[in-house]
Amino acid sequence: MRSLLRGLLALLVLLPAVSMAAPRIGVVTMEPGPSYWERFGHNAILVDAGDGSEPILYNYGFFDFDEPGFLVNFLRGHMRYRLVGMPMSRDLAYYREVGRGVTLQWLDMPVEAARELDAFLRWNAQPENAYYAYDYFTDNCSTRVRDALDRALDGALNRQLTGRSQGVTYRMEALRLGGGLPWMGLGMHLGLADYADRPLSRWDEAFVPMRLRASLREVRTAQGTPLVVSEETLLEHRLPLPPVDPPRWWPRFLLVGLVLAVGAAWLGRRRPRALAGAALGFWLLNGLAGLGLLALWTLTTHKAAFGNENLLLASPLALALLPGAWAMLRGRRPGAAFGPLLMLVFVSAALAVFIGFLPFRPQDNLDWILLLLPVHFALWRVMAPPPVPEPAPAGNPG
Image: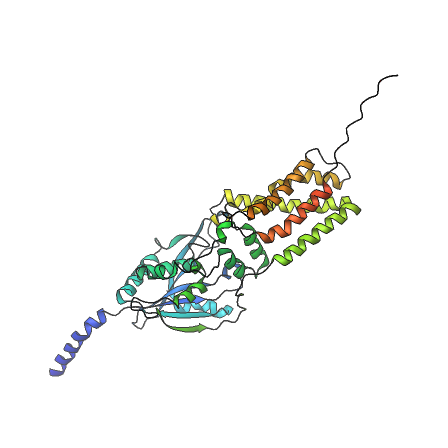
């Protein structure tokens, strides 16, 4: 009986401690992968209940290619992502298979904050709460992790990261991480407007999971101790890592632009019909690119593409030059509007240089100016038709 009473007493002593147990919180960061949707890396929040069950990984990066209207919604900027919580081993199986590295940062969170975060994630992962409107830069899988942690920590992340900057921009990060796929890097570079060129705070740059991981290493708790108490590698990275700096494209763009301009001048003197054929292809691509930029601005919610100055360099007006180029290709004289339109397309491209010097328009489009402006200038100089001579006045009868 005495042993039984001692056991009951010990249980009563331990019950408060059990009831005060808090889940352990960690941040899991996945390195970039080879596919275009994996180029920016990934992250998730790990919750270990401490009761012997497998830790749950809360992942804000789920989307469905088979969702009705997926492609149209993607183009319009109406993406729906969702939060999914699943056992850690199940979620990491894919990363192990493809060779993407994974690190884990355990966080020193107060008991109540850890419980609050655990409860919030459980609620957020319910099907009726899981979906959110995805934004490439401001509301993605990484910013959702950042915001959930910041909410639980009573704004500590925001206070410590907002006033600091490393000078990086959305464009720099997009080109650094996406430039490994040329079509992706060039497409983003052409499609991003001045919105993507403002320097970001450490808070804003956390849209990149690896940037958030680096910032968490510097965050301090209310007691002045590091928020990250330990960091471990769960999976070794077996793929090439992205570059530290964005690509430096302007020398190659300038070289290509000058070569095309000189080639246009040479063809104009030697083989004008061949130049007309080349110009036909150039203006078709240029005009279609301009229509795409205009559609991003007027028909979508991609705010990072609004007001894009590259519309001056890749102008939809180039499509109006196609009938004149076709006529010249067939050895005929283009219509009367061809010359003024050709000058307007060149002047539009030259205007991009002037706007680049304005302090309130900080768009980084020097690469495209160096590539396209020489070509527009050469085509204008070589293909502008000479004015039609006016007929001489009739002489007086003798």
